[in-house]
Image 1 (tube, protein in one colour):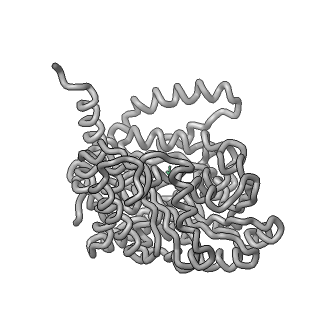
Image 2 (spheres, helix red, strand yellow):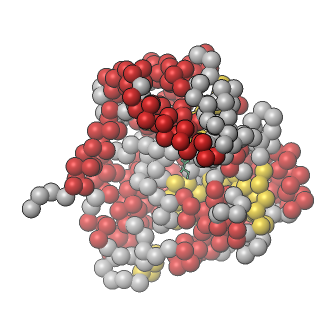
Image 3 (cartoon, protein in one colour):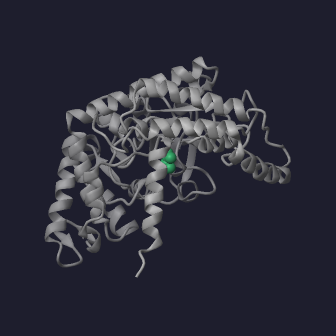
Length: 439
Ligand code: DSN
């Protein structure tokens, strides 16, 4: 029998990742140990419930694994309770909201256009915006979280839950200031640190734990574990409601989920042990150094960045000075040139998330591969050359014309000699780096 085509496709994907440079800030390459755990026999077991309270027999080992994962996470973040079962970030945020709010009650979150997440109450199309009364806050004139607006909105709407977190906000989050405002209105505080968890662990980003009631994080971004999520209940949260941990647990299972993904749980335990190593601290420090060098080099070459830079692992190129909606052309052309990133809205986005005016970049992937400052300067040079190549490809304002334009643009870009020449240079450099390295 011939081998399933899927195995060839997996090889193709691995080759693609090795030959290209990945700058998507929410992605990372996992260690061989995390990878080994993910393809183990743990995937073959059902374990609905929690350790010691399962609805299926045969969970003696799975109980030990989940307890170990919880213990390691609780120690790493210095919290009294962790739930490591959420399937990913969106289900985890749903669970926290269902645990703390009743239908129609009010919560506040950072708007998508300011770098927030869909599950932080984006209106109309998400459960969080439909099921609850969602109030969205934004950024000030310097593209920083607008605390004056937050205070004004909180006083007016008296939210029961306030969320601070981001997917495309390049600056540090001030959890203390946020808490002060929440206390003025008696709101619960949830910090969604999915993007910066690895930086928090390494002391490269402020720690939310002393200031908030609940912390949510995915486990596959800067934390460099498997695709999954965790919910941490802080001592502060437990002091306010001794039942908070069980409310969160019940919201995860049985309210929203069924059996946990045990291989992921074990992967979280391995990733937690890795994140406690001194080498992980160095990794997080290098993520930051690389981000600063990449941002400075892009600016020196004339590109504009949202908020003029970064304090984390991510940054956004603002392309509005070329034309609105240029993110689609630049992100596609970068991909042709061997550098994959994602198009993204910018603050006060003139168009839409489908035709946005920015490109989001981050350094976790390249840093995991062992790339350092010299490579960041080189990458900035390539990105600038790509922008130069496509900056006159302006998106038509007519929606029907846009479709034809994009089709033609993509066909042309795939044959563009200058982009393909950059790709050769990218491949020559990228192929020297493994996908995962502790160096
Ligand atoms: N998709 C994640 C990101 O790219 O930031 C957020 O869910």
